[in-house]
Length: 216
Ligand code: TYD
Image 1 (cartoon, rainbow, N blue to C red):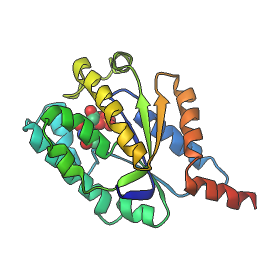
Image 2 (image 1 turned 180 degrees about the horizontal axis):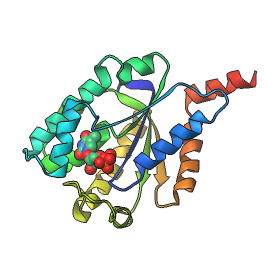
Image 3 (image 1 turned 90 degrees about the vertical axis):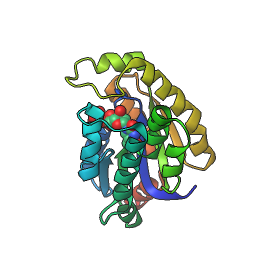
Image 4 (image 1 turned 60 degrees about the vertical axis):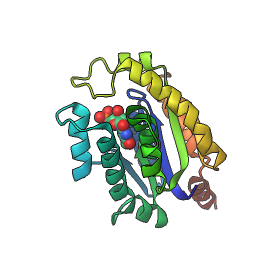
């Protein structure tokens, strides 16, 4: 597995709080006296393919599950390889944190399409250096999402139970390949989750070296 240094991914089922936590991490980095260069991003992206995906997720546009898997991979290819994309930024020493990446496709499209298409489409993408998995009982996550006005096609309990199982089944693959995997108990209050995430981030070489420089 090829790993991109300085690249972190937040993953989890719907309603696990990845988006909230990413915003908190960003704020915390910004409050440091000498913050590292941090770029936060997300998938599906807000690029043209990402927008197409979002209409599929809302149910406004109907496509076959394998088509959606292809769209996610196309969106990701731009996200990683376009100028100003993940690879370029990480190579230049920026810390990039993405709300979702390859593992979301292996999990969600793995369930929705079956077969090996999601694996084949995503095999070329490099892995992150660290992966934070926000683990939560899908029933609790579902309660948190009750107030959301629009439901995505994947936001129902039976599907989310399979999503959690698939994450648990796939995570060891990353840990075995040398990716720093942090399982976060996402059922805790947001501030407690944020504290755990922050502790996990302190293990990253880019942050440790920054601290060492700061101490000198
Ligand atoms: P999410 O981050 O939950 O977006 P929102 O801000 O709308 O809550 O992601 C949208 C959905 O897309 C989520 O259900 C997971 C799904 N998804 C996939 O199915 N495959 C993928 O490759 C990615 C990146 C996301």
